[in-house]
Every structure is written in C-alpha cells, then in structure tokens.
Image (spheres, rainbow, N blue to C red):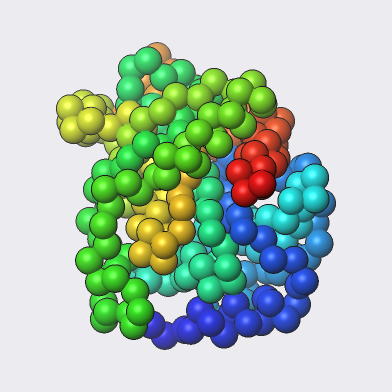
Amino acid sequence: MIFDPKITAALLRKETGLRPALGMVLGSGFQQAITHLEVAREFAYGQLPGFPTVGVTGHAGKLVVGTFDNVPVLVLKGRTHYYEGVEMERLTFPVRVLAELGIRTLLLTNAAGAVNRLYRSGDFMALTDHINFMGANPLRGPALPGLPRFVDLTRVYDRRMLKVAQMAAKKSKLRLHTGVYLAVSGPNYETPAEIRAFRRLGADAIGMSTVPEAIVARQCGLAVAGISCITNKAGGDEKAGVLVHQDVLAMGESKKDEMARFLKAFAVHHANLGK
Ligand code: HPA
C-alpha cells in the first residue's frame, strides 16, 4: 500500500474531537441526504493523504464529521468509482482509514438499476448479499500485516444492521425491499441481454460501486449495511427511452427527504443498539 491509513487517521483524530462508531458512504443520489446532520468539521478529500479524488457529477468528495440528534457520525460524501480508472486499492483506502479511526459499522449507499421485475423506480433495497461482477478485487496485492488474506464473505451484510435499516425505513416511510446487488465495472449501462442474464444469476439490483468497499470493510472487521435507491429499470426500458446519468441523479434528488430521514433514523437506531 502506497499510503498508510494510520497516518490519515491520526490527522483526522487530531482535527476533530468526535469519535463516531458509525460511518456512511453517500453514493449517487444520496449526496443531498445529510440535511439533518449537524456538521462539526468538513475535509475535502484533497486534504486527506491517500484519499482518491472524485470525478463524477453528483459526487462531492468531502469527509464530514457531525451529529444526528447527538449521535456522532462520519460521512464520506462522494466516492470514487472503478470506471474512473482508479485502482481498487486506492478507491477503498478511505474505508481503511475509517477502520483505523475506530468506526465499527459502515452504511454504504448507492443508486442502482432494478433487475428484479417487482421493483419500481423510487423504491429502496437493503442489500442481503452481493455478486462481484467487476472483474477486479480490492484485496489483490501483497498480504496486509494483521489482516486476513482470505476473507470470509458468508455474511457480508450484517443481519443486525439489516434490522436497523428496516426499522429506519419504517420510520422514514420508504419502501424497502431486501435483495442481492450485482456490481459491474461500468461505466456503460447494461444491455437488455445482460440484464436477463444477471436476473438468472440471482441479482435484484445492479450498480457500479459498493462491493469493493464492502469487501475491504469485512477484511477490517466492520459490520456492513448497504442500501440502494432504485433509480431506474436496468437494461433500458424501450418505452421510457435511453438511460442517462442525469435521470439517475434526478430520481435521487426527488427522494432526498426520505433518504435524509432514513440516514438520521439509521444513526439513532444504531446508537440505541449499544444501550
Ligand atoms: N446499471 C448500473 N448502474 C446503475 C444503474 C443501472 O441501471 N442505475 C444506477 N446505477
């Protein structure tokens, strides 16, 4: 590893007194969803050694530390994607920093296309499992001292955290399915034939992120939760016309109040678990 997550974690520890146990990664569509967060400190990714820069519209590239109803949370606002040409090791580096900082639970959010025919745009899906179809692995490379080389992924998405997500969804009145997320490298959207194939493989939703972070988080021993905002029908919908990134962002934007309520409710329920 070129950068040492301990160094970046030490810098953050020096700059902020808050010691959150919960971290959140805001993906496409979720960027505007921290309206209820009382912000204590913000850092541009460029200020943090080893953090990759974020190049996609709709992604901010800021680490935010704050509180939801006095519950401290660390938020990664924006992520780098594999399709940007960044190595897996680099784009998952922030997760290693969070683990060094003492984060115990990581909530990963994303925008995804519906593979499951029962899903509608505007629904949400809590991840119960994933299929890594990205053709790359974030654990490739030299073994890291003190961390498992062969990481068990029997239960990537923590059952207790899934319950927390379900409680938070109920509270924030969002329609939450549970299902399998399939990750591709992108950046093209899929062909109808690909989506038919992925449906047969057992996927319910498809996207271009989350899986690398979930794998690294498991290697670091974090409890992981994942939630997708279903922004479109995957593989195109001839009646709806072509699929564009702006539509994905617009669906996220239209759901931002629900998402904002959900993130806060998740943080509060998560904090209550420990009590
Ligand atoms: N495919 C892949 N990634 C996505 C999609 C999709 O249909 N929608 C949002 N992210």
